[in-house]
Structure formats: C-alpha cells, structure tokens
Image (cartoon, rainbow, N blue to C red; front, side, top):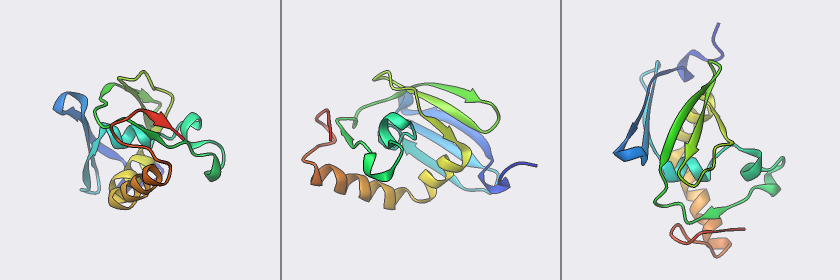
Length: 126
C-alpha cells in the first residue's frame, strides 16, 4: 500500500524549457512549481541543515532551470538544476506540500531574503 494515495503523482513534466515543473496527483490536485521555488526549497541537508536554525537562504535563483529528473525508488525524484545542485531528494509528499502551501512558503522565502539583505536576482547566501 502506498504511503498516501492523495500524494501519489499521476504526471510529472517539465515546461518552459525546464523553468517550471508540472506535477499532477491522483487526488486531482495539480501544481506548476517554478524551478526557482524548487531550488530554494530543496530538501537537501546542504540547504535545510539538520535543524530549522541551520537553514541556508540562497538568492540569485530567479532564472534557474531544471536540467534533469531522476527517479529515486518509487517514492521520490532527484532534481538537477543548471547551477549543478542535485543533492535534494523530493518525495511525492514534499512536492505535494510545496504545491499546496506554495503561497505561504514563498512568502516565508521572500521574508528571509529581505531580512538577510539578499535578492532573487543576485547570487548569495546567508
């Protein structure tokens, strides 16, 4: 039995030359997630750390693209980005959460950028 039937994907495809990942779920939910959003929300330990206070905020990813999608078992994909980041494993549940809570998560990211003096257009991290 699958972990959560509503979080099981029915379609995964790149759009706009890798700038958008379209993911549809068996529940009927579907989300267009920008490469920038996926890159800055990568679940990699390098970015998320091992505790919330270790999270790294990165800027300058407005124009990034996804250059590869590789399956990880039957539960996730590893996305490769044009900046060569490819260590995040995006589970179906995590992709569902990124889609269903996109407005909230994006607002949090923009607040992080502002608080740390970073920008979506200028590379940097804090």
